[in-house]
Length: 106
Image 1 (cartoon, rainbow, N blue to C red):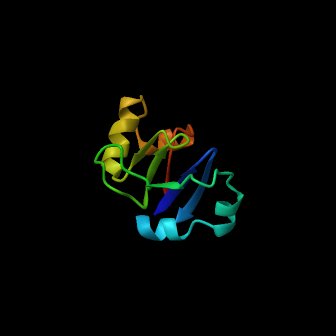
Image 2 (cartoon, rainbow, N blue to C red):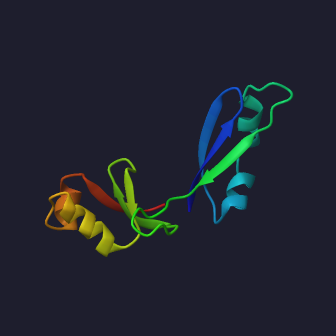
């Protein structure tokens, strides 16, 4: 699964890593990145992990359909098709050919 790790101090820095769970994702934050983030000596890092979540079911996903640049995610074909239909596409091929939606692994 792909996680976005956001370090929030006096500035905000993000990095994406592949990991099986939240703990592995946090362990994969490059140490060089931690050194480069400006912070006051008393500040602590706040680390947030966000994997891809299906917009229809709320389930975590490691593959599925993506709308645009990540506006929506769908784990199941039936949900992706329903969303494409609601947006005026007759099927997923038409939505893909129009660059509205695509399938991928994260």
